[in-house]
Structure formats: C-alpha cells, structure tokens
Amino acid sequence: MAAIGFIGLGNMGGPMARNLVKAGHRLKVFDLSEKAVAGLVDAGAEKAATAADAARDVEIVVTMLPAGEHVRAVYLGTDGLLAAARKGTLFIDSSTIDVPTAREVIAAAGKAGHAMLDAPVSGGVGGAEAGTLTFMVGGADEAFARAKPILEKMGKNIFHAGAAGNGQVAKVCNNMILGISMIGVSEAFVLAERLGLDAQTLFDISSTASGQCWSMTSYCPVPGPVPTSPANRDYKPGFTAGMMLKDLRLAQDAAKTAKAPTPLGAQAAQLYALMEASGHDSLDFSGVIKLIKGEI
Ligand code: NAD
Image (tube, rainbow, N blue to C red; front, side, top):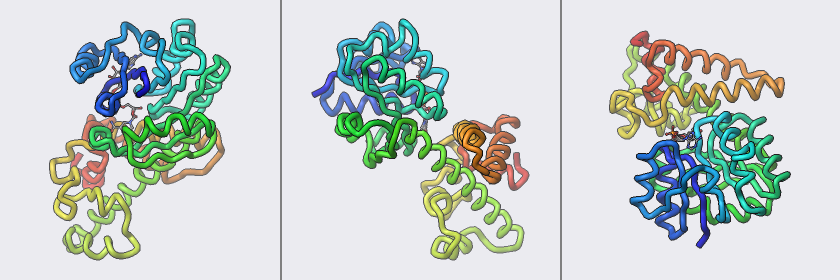
C-alpha cells in the first residue's frame, strides 16, 4: 500500500481522502482548516504540519484545492510541494482549475524531477463519498498508469484524456454542455407551464424524444418527474450555481485563448452570474429555472 500525501480536505477532498484510508493506504494530510484535518485524523490519517510536510517521504501526493491560484501557491516556490518532495514523486491535482495553470505547474513538476497529472472530477460530493467519481486525466502515459490504481479507490470511471491539461479541457467542456443544457431544459418547462402543458407530461414525452438529455432525465429542474433532483428539496445543492459559474468562466477564458466561438457558453455564464449578483449562487445550479420564471 502506498504512502500518500493529501492536501485540501474540503467537501470533495475530505471524502476522497477517507476512501484512500479505507482502502488501506497510509495518508499524511494537510488543510488550512484544523477541523477538516481532525476529521481525517479520526479516520486514521496522519496529520502533517504544513502542505510541504505532507509531500515529504511519500510516493504520491493528491491535491484538491479551490482554484488555480491556490494550486500555484501550494506547488510552486521554495516552500512549495515540488521543492519539498523527493524526486520521482507522483502528483495528482484533482482541483478544477484553468488550463494554463495546470500545464505550467505540470511542466514545473517535470523540471523538478517529478511526474504530475491534472485529474479533475465530476460526480459531486455524493460521488466523492461513494467512491464513484469520474476522473478526467491529462499527462504522460507512465504517470497515468501509476495513478490509475489510486484513482480507482476514489472513482468509478477513469479516463485518460491525453496530454497535460487535457483533463481540465474535458472538464470545462463537459460542464459548459451541462450549464447550457440546464438552461434549455428550464426554458422548455417554463414555456410548457405557461402554455398549459403540465411538467410530468412534457417529461414523459421529451425524456423519450429528441429533447432528452441528462439535465432532464437525471436532474430535472422541476419538482416531481425525477424524485432525487434538487428541485424536490427547494434547490438545495447538489452542485451550486456559484460552482457552475466558476466552471463556465474557466470555459470562457479557455475559449478566448483558443479563439473558439462559444456564444451559448457566454450567455449561460451571464445567467448564472445574475444568480450570483442576486445572492442566489448557493442554490443548486438547476435553480436557474427560478431566474427564468422571474422568481429570483
Ligand atoms: P472546498 O472549498 O470545500 O475545499 C477546498 C479545501 O481546500 C478547503 O478545505 C480549504 O481549507 C483548502 N485549502 C485552500 N487553500 C489551501 C492551502 N493553501 N493549503 C491547504 N488547504 C487549502 O471545495 P470543494 O467543494 O472540495 O472543491 C474542490 C475542487 O473540486 C474545486 O476546484 C471545485 O471546483 C472542484 N469540484 C467540486 C465539486 C463539488 O460538487 N463540490 C465537484 C467537482 C469538482
């Protein structure tokens, strides 16, 4: 069993780290939150004094941090992870961050004599707890082969998306589809209601017709047709509108750099930004239907 450093024990990182402990790995953990660290120590992990300390004398380091700026701060510099780790350490960054930062930090890891992958996830807190996350991984074949058995302890679907940064590319493209499709489904349900067609009937028809998509059949934004969807619990997340906005902004930054036209992605980002501006970004992202209805 491997010795693993784990940094970033929040909503996602906490349960992911717990699954590695459960699988029998020796974990050294660090987070700025003492409470988050205490939770993992209770589960059987060892507390590290600093992030760099968590990366010392381990074979693999996993990071699950909020954004690109945190990843840079933790990895780079004289007191960063790359300087502290012994040569040949494998780094797996599962944070959702911008593509340039992912590629820059992976290049820096290579220069420092380490291997590194970007490996963002989808599946949310539920998937992190159940160990059923989807990992979208970018980086060298050998590093992917080393990481796979570890990722399999935290996820169910592990995809190698190609070169460094491609995991982040897959993640922002997937979430751009999701953000746009949720708005499309929401508009259709509001229109149907206004025209006198009830939600269940539209669902029964469209879920077996060409309008079918995940936003409708697994995460329907109206209460009733999909009992597990956040619409049935007053849009308690799930995946917040604020997180969707973060990912759509990452997609827009990437689209600008790549000169790729994404008019609907841009519009979707603006609609979730309206939820943020009105203080509703902690609702589930499917709560965008309330914005379309004029309720928020
Ligand atoms: P979170 O805010 O709950 O956790 C982040 C953790 O990182 C916190 O515990 C924080 O204290 C810690 N942290 C921040 N800076 C640090 C530092 N310098 N050193 C050590 N620890 C530090 O966030 P989360 O929901 O766990 O999300 C983590 C990443 O996963 C984000 O990039 C997010 O976009 C992505 N993601 C989240 C979800 C979701 O449903 N929550 C789903 C898919 C992907």
